[in-house]
Length: 162
Image 1 (cartoon, rainbow, N blue to C red):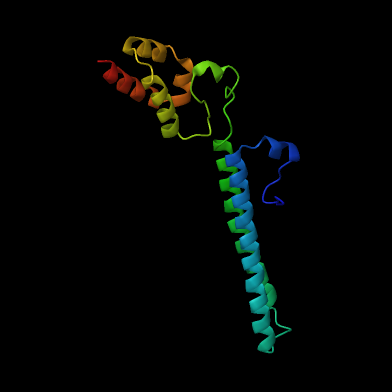
Image 2 (image 1 turned 60 degrees about the vertical axis):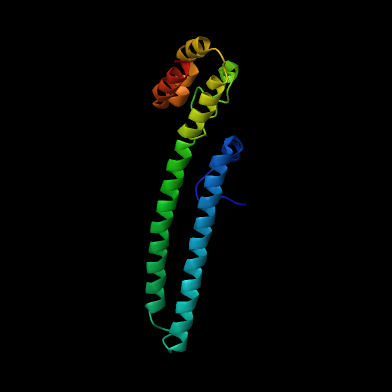
């Protein structure tokens, strides 16, 4: 598939995550659908103008300009949403590198609830409650990875240790 909804180099494409590629594909499909709709509407209007005997009228050109403006407005919305979504799905700078020794999957493309479940299941698998709490409170990766969910999971793990 050719991507012309936004400018993307081959190198950038190679570095996109699966989520980012899906966002790009969806935006490209939406742009292509908009272009097809514009062309269909123009073709239909052209036939109407010709069958009404107004081939020298400026109606067709006015309609084309109006549809192009609408297309550009809707395309700007698609591009803006795509750029925003791509930024949201960029891996964080500390993604990878040294996080392999956590014992659980560190994937910043997951939602916070999915991250929470992964870390929760990992720590609940530790049978000794004291060891579980000691490891969790010293887990700096979990603090960054879970952010506001860190304290919620702390409360859950503390409840299980009682």
